[in-house]
Image (cartoon, rainbow, N blue to C red; front, side):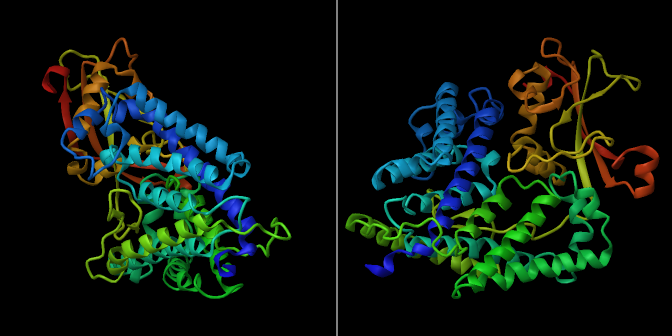
Amino acid sequence: MEWFTADQYWLGRLVFQRALAAVYLFAFLGAALQFRALIGERGMLPVPRHVEGVPFRRAPSLFQLHYSDRFFALVAWTGCACALALLAGADGLLPLWGGMLLWAVPWALYLSIVNVGQTWYGFGWESLLLEVGFLAVFLGNDETAPPVLVLFLLRWVLFRVEFGAGLIKMRGDACWRKLTCLDFHHETQPMPGPLSWFFHHLPGPVHRVEVAANHFTQLVVPVLLFTPQPIATAAACLMIATQLWLVLSGNFAWLNWLTIVLAVSVVDFGGAGAPSQPPAPPLWYEVAVIAVTALILGLSYRPARNLFSRRQIMNYSFDPLHLVNAYGAFGSVSRVRQEVIVEGTSDLTPRQDSEWREYEFKGKPGDVRRWPRQFAPYHLRLDWMMWFAALSPAYARPWFGPLVERLLDGDRDTLRLLRHVPFPPQAPPAYIRARLFRYRYTTWRELRETGACWERTFVREFLPPTRVDQRR
């Protein structure tokens, strides 16, 4: 079938696949390095306890069949190895069916992790990686040109990511309609980056242009993805430019990078890299692609209906395999930044004059003189959840108590998630407390005079002084 493949996307597929493999690598690396403290056997939300009440059909996972920290580590590091192999182009050295199997391995492994990850893996970019990763299985390798149907499905994903985010904003916070949200967002976003302070201090009219450009890119440009070339390529390039702007202004794990990867699949490179006579795809492959396309289009009914619903939800999976999902972000924007600051003391009886030493997290603001770092596409899960905890203690109820317990025990796996620990593991604090502070960016003048990029003010107690026997 001549219509089945599109030779002009040969190079685009290659770039897409290598970039997607890089995203997989960051995802598995984060899982391997952080899981023990978060969801391990002695973690804050242990997988064994979780799977006891969740049937396999609701959350299919290898860890439903067996769990141990050693087995999880094997899965995560195997995912890293597969990602590196794909990044190096190993799928192109295999027959078509072998390349598809190689792409299916990281998808199945990461699905197993996400489906037992609980609140630590409740972010929209987890489902996005799984949805895109599933389609990548059927994108083919050097034995065939890219299938038109899979390319269409990738555009359908990109459309929902951008258009869903645009609609949730227009239906949500009034500041998006007034073009004023970026007066606050660069300061109050979950994890600022090294340039966020400067973005915040851009003139008000520039912020208005930022918001207007965002609306145009998310509400108008996505429709152009389904128009003929070169219009579709121009639309994709505009999306890439917008996403790079977001990469510069904050730390959003791999959300922006994966959106860029999706947009690359739309770009028409004019057949660069394609052989003069591309081999015809085998019949079994055509049947498989057509069947998957029919499946995805059938499952797309609910997310498509959600897009146009007045009760639109965001970052939601409609099936346990995360094949088709709803996306969106920042339907509301915080006007004030608050941070939970965790402190410990060695005093056996806390007093008014006790010395409280502060724990420093890797990414979230703490020390007012410490300039934010760039971590994305790496995902600091505990830091992100601390941002949610500052919004409302309800977000932290399942895991904050266990976090405090592990700090009081000097748990080494938990301490590795932090940047600075004021107590050695062998001599943990006698008490832990948490206090809520309001943070704001300093002005240019304050930055010059104090060297601090933040100014903070005490708000209230978040957790009173707590010792080990009070947590058990």
